[in-house]
Image (cartoon, rainbow, N blue to C red; front, side):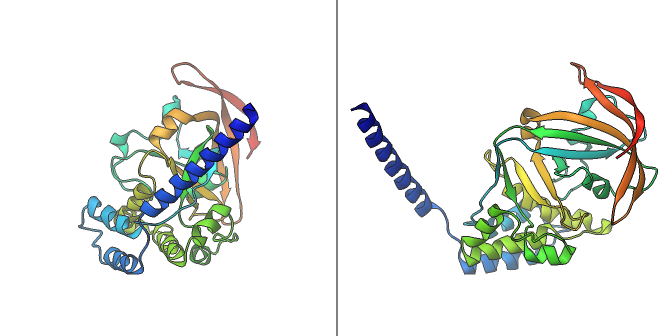
Length: 301
């Protein structure tokens, strides 16, 4: 009798959830071709050198009003890597994480001035290229692990990005969440493609201040609210052959654990490969966050 009641309750619950989902879908804004066309025109006409950040975000908001995304959820934790150039070994773990907001004095691909985020990648070798290291540079590569249920938005996984970066990966077909996002509708795919064009463009140093105002606005709009914790996107410096992961500082502070760090001197770095010598590694961290370095026998990485 209890089993029958429980099954009946389950059926009623599923019907209620299905009805609620239908109601929510009906209430969601839908992409309209005219609105998308007008938003793209507005974005193209922005004077990125003079307009306010809020104006850029407003234009991006018009473009993605009704845009549907299949967001990947990493349930078992994700190993990510971050690198920083250091002449001498850092002393505290705070030097390896997101920078203090007071030190963020310029725009980045995913941050505005005064906004601290955590840039990382899913491959240990990528940071050497992101930092554009030269032989003789000394770098700390730190490894971190996210807690379960990391929810990321995504941008840049498009065929045009693959062609522009000469990537060896089929970026528009590499992940199910990318395929699902494209399959919502042709108009949805169009918005996805256009966002990828804007966000994943290589940027010359002299153009960073203006172009990054646009890409950082895209990142903020794609991570607004408390549900999305960051953005995953193909790394530009390695031709889209690995992924970068940008995390909000609030998520990093609460749900990312330090795993390991190495102090490395770069020996060689070119388009084909990198090599370096591990000088020291972190053996432990004390309760005040001090990094305890253990002299390492010289080894290659």
